[in-house]
Image (cartoon, rainbow, N blue to C red; front, side, top):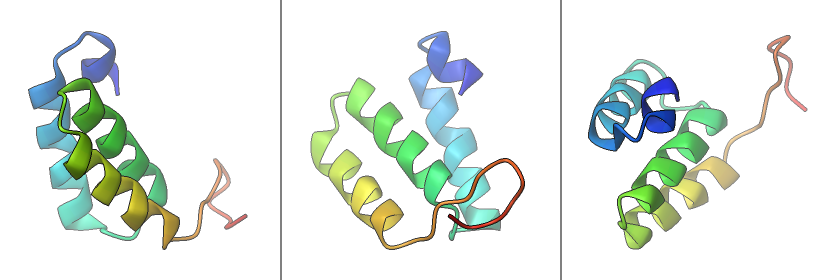
Length: 66
């Protein structure tokens, strides 16, 4: 998300996609991907990412599901 904070959205998206290849069941990463896609003006893809996130359990820093 540091890359997104520096408005390096394409790079951020690349790293998020790599992360999702390793673990596609992480809701937080899907949410971050949606945020980056929105920043890139790719609203439809962002909505798909948010929809995927809504199907997965959220976790917090301790790794436990909410």
